[in-house]
Image 1 (cartoon, helix red, strand yellow):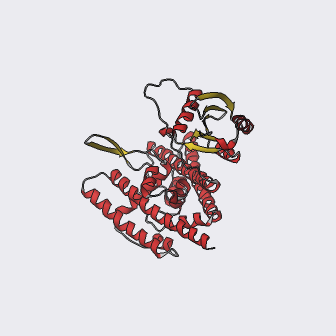
Image 2 (cartoon, rainbow, N blue to C red):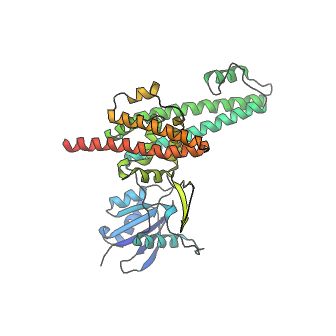
Image 3 (cartoon, rainbow, N blue to C red):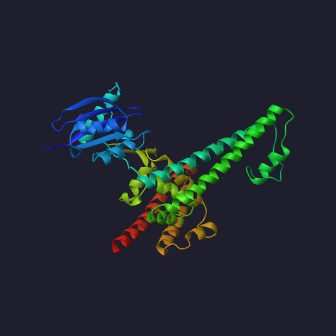
Length: 377
């Protein structure tokens, strides 16, 4: 008989509800302990030999600190996807103790789906990339506030200024837009300061990302450079893909990567009836966003030049061939779906899903090359 004890942990900022599924079938709650390192060490010592324990908890805002601590204590631990935990339809009572018991029971029966836990390098890069994404969203909000403020008071730029948020546009606001009321003038200065502050914040984060990539492991740097051979995948997008997806060779095929991004179609089929609906969105939202943004580039005919040509300099020829094949295939798919009357959001979603396949091919080829070089050395 197996002697493995399955431990379910319902983790919160200050507390951890603990339950154990015994090898003989019994599932019992062990109460609630403080979410502190010393309390976790005492819990592991109480439950028995670490080699006979398998623990799990749901991914959430507490991050992976508990995972790393249990791993250091030689306890096998997995972080599971909360949206894929089985739920009984008639269960209307939810407590921390019941959640921990359900995790232990489901973990023992193999009904839980573990998520990828990033290593130290990927986690640090991911947090930095997400900080830049937050800065971009804050910049958009700051621009909207300033733009709507000017619109409310009838201040429109001259015809010579064709685009908003350019240097000319900001110069026009600072030099020619003024109000007699001191309250409005103070409001304008605050909105302008916030827009400029957001721009400076993004520049600092871009510089920090460049420095982080330079100090990253060689294989991570190589994948980031190789992905930029694709149209629509510049430096920030490539870094975002690597930070969010990690080592792409962990996906055996492109389809699991597509599912990880949430870009696959939902399905409700029964008998001879097959119905596929909108994308599931049950995946990494950050990865899905950058892929959709990149997919818009394939509405234009295949072309090689400018920044894209510069990004491909020094890359292997097989990587360039994959990128060129992606341009032709994805552009044809965009045109074919457009001719069929599909809406643009649907088109770029389909193109983005296929783009992930080319990203997977380039990343896996690059990672395999480094693996071969390491074995040869």
